[in-house]
Length: 196
Length: 334
Image (cartoon, rainbow over all chains, first blue to last red; front, side, top):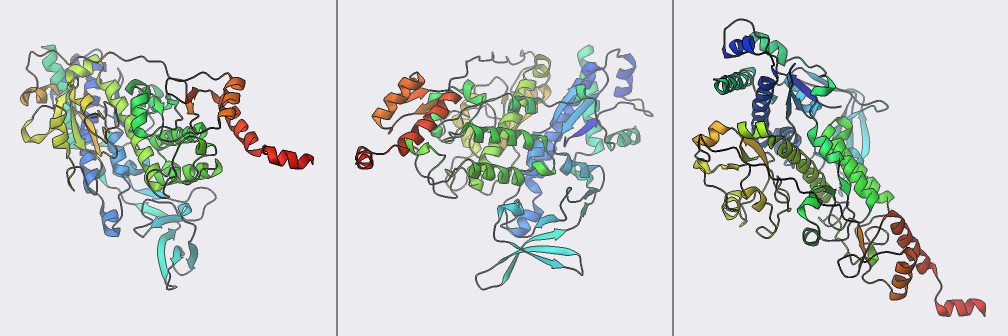
């Protein structure tokens, strides 16, 4: 399953904070975990919605329609709180995993190439959706090209074919640790206020 | 403290199953198929919002097997994975349409007798066009996600803490509503009776009638007829919750106001699928109804049917088409 779980653990250490005070007195952490989860879920939605409407560098460069994958990630957060933990479920993992580490993408079993769209017409599409492309191999760089023949016999490059892609970590794909911590603290304050 | 939390947040691990929240996926999987020859407007007139919200349907999409493929594709898209991205699922749906004999000119086999007009290839009416498939997938995914938000958001404790919804843009649009002489969301909000909030934000209590009105086809031609986002076709706006304290600071609730009331769930039996007999040869129609014991539906020229009847209809049409005319049968005996 392509999913990311973020565990909002409150094993805090140093500074005495609202969180630490409340943890000391709670016998059942369920409500606190629910409230933390809700706050962070909504933080994730707002943050992902913001970047989803702004981050379209490749689509804009190609003059293509954005794929909407970050927008669908913004629709996905669900939180659950139990006695043991608060967990946020996010999809799809293949996009959001980059928030935590570099991601290496290789062809799936039986395939040799990854296809990278390099044309406005192919952005957001699979090579299989075209029936007029032919393959060109570059032995020097060990890359390939799927191209179309134009009416004047020129080649129109449509997809770049590579053996693997490494996407560098991008922590800004998700809200900062400070922002998440602030929501967790706010949840603890809310609970404290409700209890007094 | 920050350092300890940072270490925890950057760690990916598998959560125990009881912690996984997949309410949206469960909702999507739990729907029925509703094959239909009806147009969008007719669908809204014929089936209630409660039925439509529990169904997988698409205007003028009569083939149950294709609808099953759509349903499966929506669930795969929601699960994610490199083989479950929208382009791959779009390719699979196109292949399914080809396998089932669909063309934009003739529809599915048998559609020619159902009063479904020819579709211009590549248009929104063409079930195999990118435009149509993208719209179906994006709309169905969004409806499932919003239904999950609504279900979770109306739980009593959560409703107390988060009594409001805000409509925010999640999908960028090349031409958003409000441009090119169309009514923008601020205007739609006012027409739907939404409260005026400082800064022009689209925020209301979860039980505010504005949420039903935004999806009302009597108010907006492009409304889908649901009370969750997306309220209109190709809308890029979705919900996010608003806390009690923010609702109070915006003047939408008082400190002493009771939490919003969750609407009572509507229970309505799922209707039997119907098929249109309009344009069918009267002799064939009478023979079909007699042989299959089909019952008449509420709509004129329609009968209720089940899968067996569907097969019988197709077989009857094929047999009738293959049957020689009176002249041919005379010649063959001569």
